[in-house]
Image 1 (cartoon, helix red, strand yellow):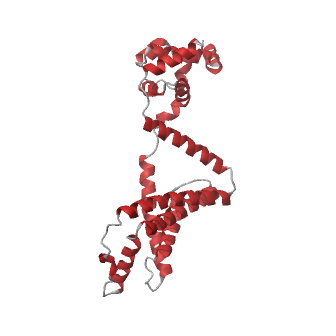
Image 2 (cartoon, one colour):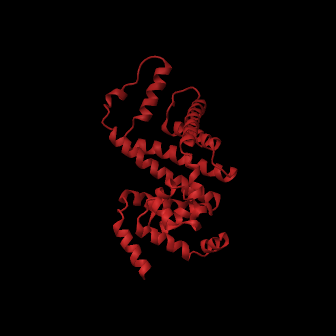
Image 3 (cartoon, one colour):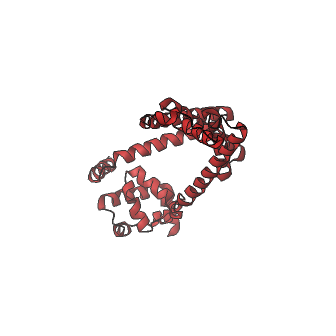
Length: 261
């Protein structure tokens, strides 16, 4: 009972977490649960669901963009240019990319839906998601977008035009994948704070995770923690008591404390 009262008092003294951060954390948790459930389904079911949900998201984004760009003067795209086939092809490309909300919703739905569906298939077949799988998915979405949008419909060989667009999409997404891979690698130090992070979240003290990292108080140091060590990490008295009490009550940490003596 006293433990619960102390937790409530500490929670009141601590600054409230940002509502946006709470919403993001909740959304990420739901997304993780959905992906876990999806991974247990058969390949056709997974591909169908992933394609449908991604296409819906893409359609919403496309409709919004189409609404924002719907003020473009229609006279600019009403009269086809007179001249070379290259000029006509460019005009048709502009028409396919400058449609209203419904056209843009269709285009984005095709791009995102096909991309996500192929990515899902490649992940199941290859057991991983890498740059090769990403480029294959981008190629498929680029080629399908060209066929559905009618871009290059006046070209002598529409299949070749679709392949060219697919290759362009694949190169762009491959480059973005490698760039994102380079900058999104989690810090190596995070793997040393898995138990620490879990403990702090269970106690409602997640705001003090940075104190543990700054003091290099990793998972292996948890059974050795003392009040002075936590004080040096600039953790207030209330949270220190909760942390030490949790360690004393945890059977695994208590056994490690006994074996270390």
